[in-house]
Amino acid sequence: MLALSRKKNEALVINNDIEITVLDIRGDQVKIGISAPKEVPVYRKEVYLQIQEANKEAMNADNLEALKDLF
Image 1 (tube, rainbow, N blue to C red):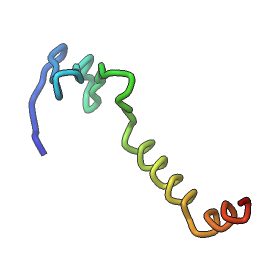
Image 2 (cartoon, one colour; image 1 turned 120 degrees about the horizontal axis):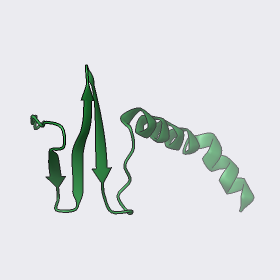
Image 3 (cartoon, one colour; image 1 turned 90 degrees about the horizontal axis):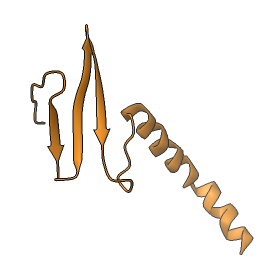
Image 4 (cartoon, rainbow, N blue to C red; image 1 turned 90 degrees about the vertical axis):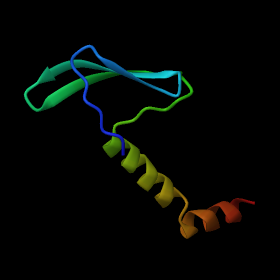
Protein backbone atom coordinates (compact mmCIF):
# COMPACT_ATOMS: atom_id res chain seq x y z
CA MET A 1 0.00 0.00 0.00
CA LEU A 2 1.21 3.45 -0.89
CA ALA A 3 0.58 6.01 1.89
CA LEU A 4 0.64 9.69 0.94
CA SER A 5 -0.06 12.88 2.84
CA ARG A 6 -2.30 15.48 1.22
CA LYS A 7 -3.69 18.80 2.40
CA LYS A 8 -7.07 20.34 1.62
CA ASN A 9 -7.47 21.01 -2.13
CA GLU A 10 -4.50 18.79 -3.02
CA ALA A 11 -5.05 15.83 -5.33
CA LEU A 12 -3.70 12.50 -6.53
CA VAL A 13 -3.82 11.24 -10.11
CA ILE A 14 -4.12 7.54 -10.85
CA ASN A 15 -3.51 6.07 -14.29
CA ASN A 16 -3.75 9.47 -16.03
CA ASP A 17 -7.57 9.57 -15.84
CA ILE A 18 -8.62 9.25 -12.20
CA GLU A 19 -8.21 12.21 -9.87
CA ILE A 20 -8.81 12.10 -6.12
CA THR A 21 -9.01 15.48 -4.38
CA VAL A 22 -9.15 16.24 -0.65
CA LEU A 23 -12.18 18.55 -0.37
CA ASP A 24 -12.44 19.06 3.37
CA ILE A 25 -10.90 17.90 6.64
CA ARG A 26 -12.88 18.10 9.88
CA GLY A 27 -11.48 16.33 12.91
CA ASP A 28 -10.98 12.67 12.01
CA GLN A 29 -13.16 12.86 8.89
CA VAL A 30 -11.87 13.60 5.39
CA LYS A 31 -14.16 14.44 2.46
CA ILE A 32 -12.77 13.42 -0.91
CA GLY A 33 -13.87 13.99 -4.48
CA ILE A 34 -13.24 11.45 -7.23
CA SER A 35 -13.17 12.26 -10.93
CA ALA A 36 -13.08 9.17 -13.11
CA PRO A 37 -14.36 8.10 -16.53
CA LYS A 38 -17.96 6.85 -16.53
CA GLU A 39 -16.82 3.32 -17.36
CA VAL A 40 -14.78 3.13 -14.13
CA PRO A 41 -17.00 1.99 -11.25
CA VAL A 42 -16.37 3.78 -7.94
CA TYR A 43 -17.89 2.33 -4.76
CA ARG A 44 -17.47 2.76 -1.02
CA LYS A 45 -15.79 -0.41 0.19
CA GLU A 46 -18.74 -1.57 2.29
CA VAL A 47 -21.05 -1.26 -0.74
CA TYR A 48 -18.53 -3.07 -2.95
CA LEU A 49 -18.37 -5.96 -0.46
CA GLN A 50 -22.19 -6.18 -0.39
CA ILE A 51 -22.26 -6.34 -4.18
CA GLN A 52 -19.64 -9.10 -4.19
CA GLU A 53 -21.61 -11.11 -1.61
CA ALA A 54 -24.84 -10.71 -3.57
CA ASN A 55 -23.07 -11.90 -6.72
CA LYS A 56 -21.75 -14.98 -4.89
CA GLU A 57 -25.24 -15.80 -3.60
CA ALA A 58 -26.68 -15.41 -7.08
CA MET A 59 -24.19 -17.93 -8.41
CA ASN A 60 -24.89 -20.68 -5.87
CA ALA A 61 -25.72 -24.18 -7.13
CA ASP A 62 -29.46 -23.91 -6.46
CA ASN A 63 -29.77 -20.94 -8.77
CA LEU A 64 -27.75 -22.70 -11.45
CA GLU A 65 -30.07 -25.71 -11.25
CA ALA A 66 -33.10 -23.44 -11.58
CA LEU A 67 -31.57 -21.92 -14.71
CA LYS A 68 -30.93 -25.38 -16.15
CA ASP A 69 -34.60 -26.27 -15.57
CA LEU A 70 -35.61 -23.30 -17.72
CA PHE A 71 -33.89 -24.79 -20.76
